[in-house]
Image 1 (cartoon, rainbow, N blue to C red):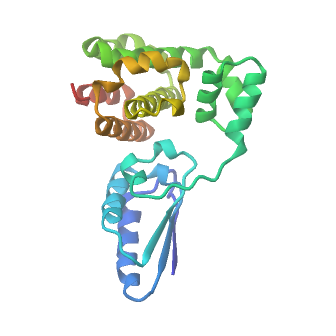
Image 2 (cartoon, helix red, strand yellow; image 1 turned 30 degrees about the vertical axis):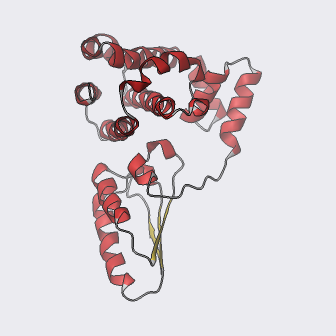
Image 3 (spheres, rainbow, N blue to C red; image 1 turned 120 degrees about the horizontal axis):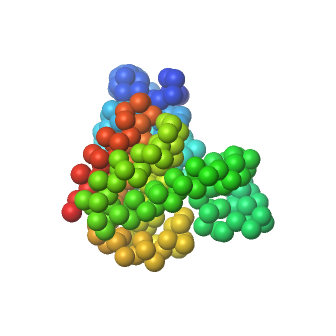
Amino acid sequence: DYIVVEPEGTTVKVDQIRTLKSQLTKTAMESSAIVCVIHAVDTLTQGAANSLLKFLEEPTGNIHFILLTEQLSKVLITIQSRCQIIRFQSNAGENIVATLKERGVLNATAQLLSQLTSNIDQAVEMLESESFGQIRQESWNWFVRVFTNRAMAFVTIQSQVMPLLATKADSELFLTLLQIYIRDALLVARGVEGAIIQSDKLATMKSFANHLTVSEWIKEHEKMTNAIAKVGANVGVQAVLEQWVLQIPK
């Protein structure tokens, strides 16, 4: 038996996962093997992700899940940890990095842009955009502030961050950059420094990566995945950022 789940609209919803679980429970009694493919698993709503996670935590021998995504960094790490990750390499990211470096762009900037888009024209447009440069710089400054002066970080959400986030796309970009920084901090905390995206930020990252444990960084990555989903669902980014700051372990 072969079951496919695809996003309804822009997300995979909790009702879809509940229906899937019901189907699998019935089919498992009638079939020797079931293959279930979930497309765009990075678009799972929070409820859908939690529901799927419970299913993955208690695997059944004759059910095989194939979870597909083009944005692994947006998939909850707790889901990733219960899967065998197989990467089908695309040349797009490598091509973007190579093309940008040929134009004199620093490696760390080229690597970052390759994480944000798979389109070279869009990468160049972002690079030349004044707003992108401002959001990139403030996202890093604010991220460092969160782990060095949290009270000031909270205050500057309204005074320094919000004036830069004029659109939902700006807000999602800001949060995505934060998620990349969290990923890099997690890797530094694990001692895997060579795998970070923002290699030019390594020295600063080292100064606070050990402020949280590896498991705490993993939780922060998951929180940021949820934060991006909330903003995508039209929750105000200021409230999302304030909530995130207040919930980080001290």
